[in-house]
Image (cartoon, rainbow, N blue to C red):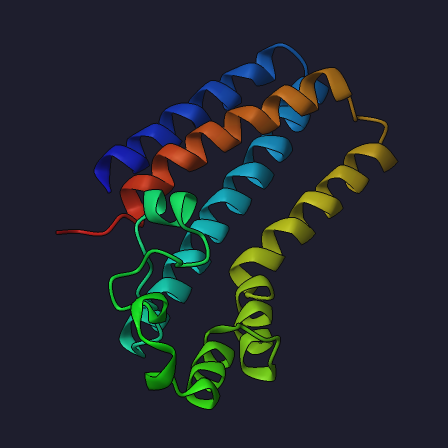
Length: 171
């Protein structure tokens, strides 16, 4: 946590030092930096919270190895496969019911989890700040795209490094 605070403090001190260049440069840099920093940190926190919720509610699905999925996407070569059983021993109705359970359908429950993650206030408020900051710069004739866009990158880098440290899983 100390590393993240130091990194954000150093970035802010450099931004404040940019006020000696011009007020317009400083405002573009500050608003773009804070917007992208808040978006990255808010998204990281919301994602971490969503993952923790799913882990505690035991909604984690067992997934096959990535190489297995690439080599055998339809599970044709599984050991417990029905491909090796004699035809007389197969219960086709049970097999069809089992395969239907494996198919993921769009349900209200799955939609609830998707909407919950994307409408988190930790994700929405930074985007509102981004839009309102951009509009404020444009309305006050301070917007300089040549400064604003690279400043977004600075916030993304600082936010990513800080987010990894702040919201990583301690083992």
